[in-house]
Image 1: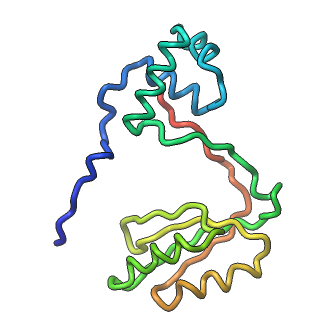
Image 2: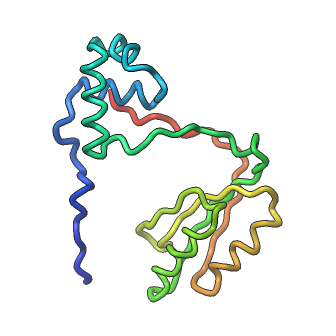
Image 3: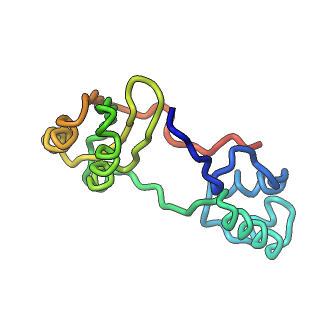
Length: 160
């Protein structure tokens, strides 16, 4: 079995996070553009106190960024595809590298189970799918699913 290093930047227990931090995080997940004054009103803190807490949550890696959530279909990407890949053991690093180089892949996960990778991509047309899959098939078996709907769209973590 290979040695596995635990990354010190990733903790799996919320150390130093109190109930107020959780309330702030819950609010920011719903609206990351809220002002510190409004956020403070919602959690019963002053704006400077909220700013200090948010800065600490950013510095400790709890908050990893702020993003606009966009609808791929509205931008001309109506096809959403999920792909699982079962690569040969010697090809695992190659799969990661290829996935990083394909701009249509918006997320890629290394996982346990029969398949080692799972990724999501958005395409302008189904015709774009085959050339992308062809990048991976020399190195492993792919399983592809086209998404019809998202009955449970991305949502905030249940922090409260």
